[in-house]
Image 1 (tube, one colour):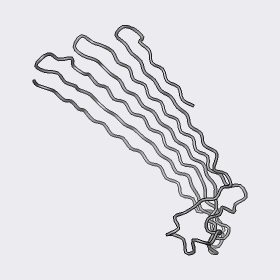
Image 2 (image 1 turned 180 degrees about the vertical axis):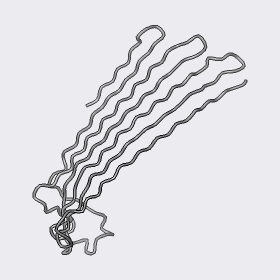
Image 3 (image 1 turned 90 degrees about the vertical axis):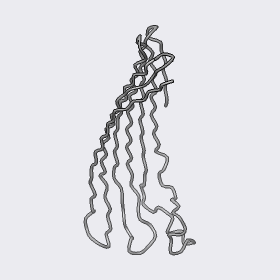
Image 4 (image 1 turned 45 degrees about the vertical axis):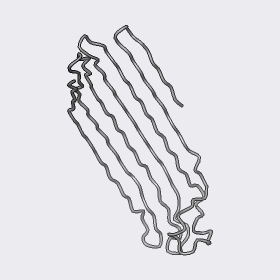
Length: 177
């Protein structure tokens, strides 16, 4: 699903927005095909078949971008805002080799990010024009996955982790003729 909007709010203010949502739940009970170079016997169908009764791979992605432009006497002020979210839920098995018999793996991966950029483009004159601005980015990720190997132990091995990223910058350029 995708929607776009562009509007001249006033004679000096313009708005542009795009939002999209993607959902994919089409990978249920399918075959997966690893690179044959990594298989002990590429002709063995057991190595490429998901044998779990209820495997799934569900992915959702959301993206929103908003740009506002305002004409000033000395230049154009622009704000560019972006947001993205991704979530993947999955469950499958480790079909193939005997020591992986009964193996189940799955979990959830989440990721959120947003960014903001503020720009001032100076109209300038015949001698000088330029651009100054600020940029900020922030992202959070979380993994909550597990691996169950009944041949090795009676409990699933969880792997939970989180991450955070942030960045900012001040920038500018000038053109002297």
